[in-house]
Image: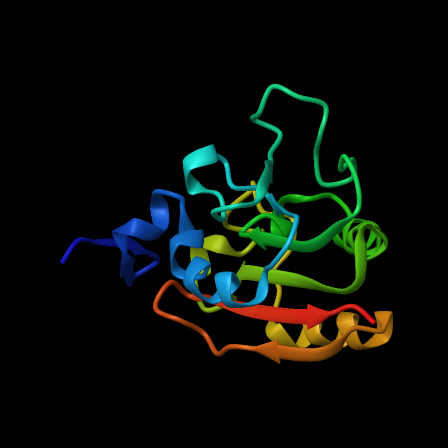
Length: 162
């Protein structure tokens, strides 16, 4: 078993290599139907199958606040913690999702100390499923589901837009 250590705690080495979405894609495929985006996959081969991948590393004009057209779903794994203003991004995504569409988020949990913004300068925010669910409720999402913390020290939250 390959492990890494941070501040005296051990974590799976795969957490340092990217592609965390491999843990949430099987679940996302149960919710995400029609035309949709995978925002922030880093590499096209890491994106949700059948999605239109959006990432700053791709050679086009699209990013989290500039999507080509409305969609049936937005899937995003380990991306939201990197944006400057997550509420602005989530508000924009809400506008881009068609009625009855899905927002599926997979996010790092506070339990992984290295991912906290004061330890990892690439991360601007740290979330909990409660924070994301509260935002979704206030925004008007329905049928909100969330997971517990998985072995990747991450969690999923899914909401359906009215």
